[in-house]
Length: 483
Ligand code: TRP
Image (spheres, rainbow, N blue to C red):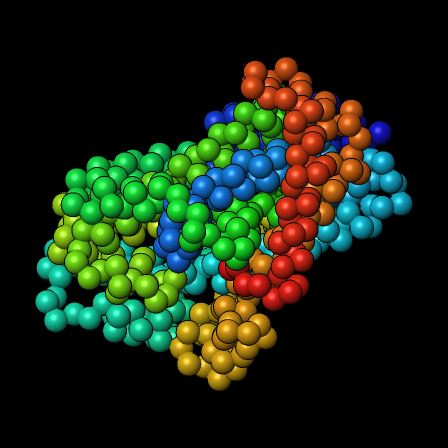
């Protein structure tokens, strides 16, 4: 009863606590959630896996996964949150209990699994985010002092990640920035930062796109990305595309449930989902076009890039900005600002998942929750940071074949195990445990756009999405790696 009354009037005072903070507008929600989605996944992971999987056909499969699995689950997470007005644990309890009251515990466990995923993901994500601060500082130096002719970008990178003190300082700075935003809450912290940073991020990307498209490699880059060649497409690539669509949209761990719980009744879940998914996808493609145009413009660069995930962003690009890219001396530092901003709007949503749990379920104040969670997570950030510095055990541990070190172990576990399993249960909660009336009243409430068909969503969330996700989990169990 309390839920229903609470739900029907978001401004009503909740018993014993202050009323729940909400996004101030639909645009605020879309910007904050898009900020969560756009991150290192778009700028660092997507270009790399597109590269590895030979472009075209992989990109097409990825787009299909985004539309057929990502979009319906985005709507499911936001609606579960909006309906219960609680963060991941409480909202999933309510969702499962709507048809099966005894299932509250199970719903709570799924939510708890998501909170744990957020905790772990944030602990290592911060390390890469910290690198963007380092490269920002370096590139400002190069812009004013010139790019040293004898500098080896590979050696610079190795020295950077190998320096324990530097790694800790960078990731601590990033953690403090994240905590500072979440400390101020939903509308005054997270939404305000997203409103300022996302337009800057779009602006920088647009400038870079113009510059990149003027380079000689642009045509070849566009062909690589958009011309499908199905001969190159293997089963692993399909799974990788599906796994990445969870990661890039921040799905499978209750982040969007949490953000959905701050949507008031006036704002549309369907419109917001469409905008978030479209923006995230466009940005990933634009980032890829930019990077490949630069790389294809330089003879021999294709072969050099090959090796590692970090290679493109932190080894090949810095030098190319100062040797090849038109206006690179300006765009270089701006690019690393872009990476840092994109990462920050993602880390704040990760910290929000953990904090909101502590606030809603454990009764902590926001200030205590953000500082406490932030500090606890940073302890694990130390492990992740030190796993690049040749530290015994942290650098060498190997739980999953070929994933040496704490960092890679954590990333593999979250991306390949936690997000797909969490996502699977979320599809069941929305498609099978919630009643048709409940989901329909959230999606079809007069705010939805004309293209939306409730019956189609229900078919995708009950059948297409869970079967596709179950297929990933099955292959993960068989040991196929698609991180
Ligand atoms: N979507 C983020 C990116 O592309 C990463 C991410 C995954 C995430 N799950 C999340 C961010 C949950 C915030 C919340 O970089």
